[in-house]
Amino acid sequence: MTVKFSEVWDLDVLFPGGSNSKELRLHMENAGPKLDEFETLARNFQVPASKEDAEQVVRLLEEVKNTMLHLHQSDAFIGCLMAQDTEDKKAALLQSEASSLGARFQSAVQKVQQDLAKTEDDVWTNLLEDQSLREFGFLLNEWREEAKMQLSEKEENLITALSVDGYHGWSQLYDMLVGEIKITMTVDGKEKVLSVGQANNLSSHSDAAVRQESYEKLEAAWTEKEEFFAKTLNSIAGFRLAVYDKRGWENPLQEPLHINRMKEETLNAMWGAISKNKQPFVEYLNKKGAMLGKDGLDWYDVDAPVTESTQQFSYQEGAEFILKHFEKFGPELAKFAEQAFEKGWIEAEDRPNKRPGGFCTGLPLTEESRIFMTYSGSMSNVATLAHELGHAFHTYALRPVHSLNRSYAMNVAETASTFAEMIVADAAVKNAETNEEKLALLEDKLQRSVAFFMNIHSRFLFETRFYEERKKGVVSAERLNELMEEAQQEGFAGGLSSTHPHFWASKLHFYITDVPFYNFPYTFGYLFSLSIYAKALEEGTGFEEKYMALLRDTAIMTAEDLAMKHLGEDITQQAFWEKGIALCVKDAEEFIALTSSVE
Ligand SMILES: [Zn+2]
Image 1 (tube, protein in one colour):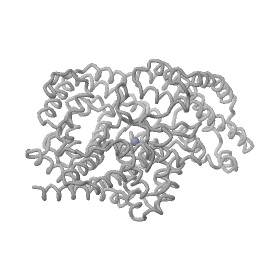
Image 2 (cartoon, rainbow, N blue to C red):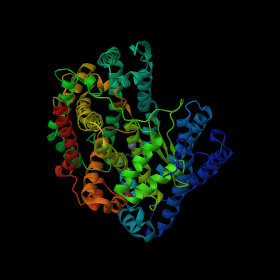
Image 3 (cartoon, rainbow, N blue to C red):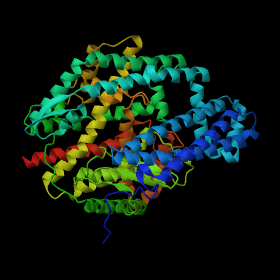
Image 4 (cartoon, rainbow, N blue to C red):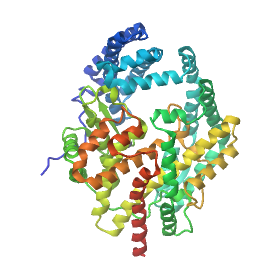
């Protein structure tokens, strides 16, 4: 039998003593001189003039790496401290210290990127052919391209400076506005004053009246403040469009596509394939409405439970379930996960003062990962644990790669995690002991497909149309409601009997200034991973080696090249995307067959 796994992670092995750690203090203090040195190096860096300058570039990259790893090690550790105890005030102080160190590093790197962009084309070609720089070709070209897409250094610096109050300030104002909203509700017999987040969580409450009331009260709150939200959204989009205009970027998708290293054709192929295959999910939504005793499904019932999952797993049982099914996919993944359990890389205990949600973080200097979540015994907790282990496995697969070649984009970030989660979720459906249990697990999977194919599609449709209208002027709250409702009708292919007109006000993602179009990369990651999963099912255990080779390349090529090299697939074509969708369609069909036989 396997050993008993600890539910509490081991952080002391990294820096003993938590936020009072002397070793951590020393590490943070050492960051200062390291940064001074790096800044001097960056300041003295000259625009490369001949191929002899390769040496200068190599030396600089080496220092970028060293400084970055040093900062990441403490950043990740402090992130863990903050998550395990939200009242750790010392950790909060350490975090703000760490973020100012990070800002210094970023601006020094930017200076160098600008210099590299100024290199003459023929010198550049010669430089990249140098033996010592060959492995950085993709990264260096990307830096140079980015710098070239931008305005002059002076103008970009001005934009960055003005962004603090003129752009990011709007995003912070949004958080403040939402933070002020309080919803008074009677839940489980008690009157409660809820935050927006808490009220949102009631969307999956088992009592239909609670779901409807929380939705209606939230909608009323968004309506009351709609002018403020409309002003905020228009200002964020207006700022962004003005910057794009100055840089000569006409398409609002240029930046998000560039960040995700993908082509617009690929994005269109993905949505095209999804749009063609919505009918089975519409049928699932209709069926769900009927199971809830209604004619059609309302927006506020999309997350409603139709059946109660009763199966409970102790942490040990959950861990063993994961290991058993990882083993069937491949020995490396199973061995890796077992070590993560044994070495105390996972924090899963259900106790107060922990942050909600889950994450996985990498500690690059010691080549370790830490996983954070709160485990309470449901199958969906087991799936989350598998998901985070998938992220950690991605980091593990990248170990042989140079540290500067490990920064993968958001669209491929969820590949390994969704993949690992799929292995476990599929096994759970197959192992379900009763039809009721099977239905609950299938529904869990289907809710995810509906979110990625329908809900996120509607957000994307809304955002693209909003940007087009915003180019011509300010868009009123009334018009935003209309755009949102149209997008939801289309995104859900008419599968809902009521929509959520103020969704544009309620969704934080529209107000994130650091990342534009915070929607389609989710759907990309989900489907990309599913297509790889479909291939793994075809090829069996031998696939693991190919899978790890793909993960290793996630940060050094475009999404199109990655799929072509490792899967032999052209992702600019709808046919690729349909393979992943087909797996989800099967879930919908099974759900409908099962609910028809139960009746
Ligand atoms: Zn994830």
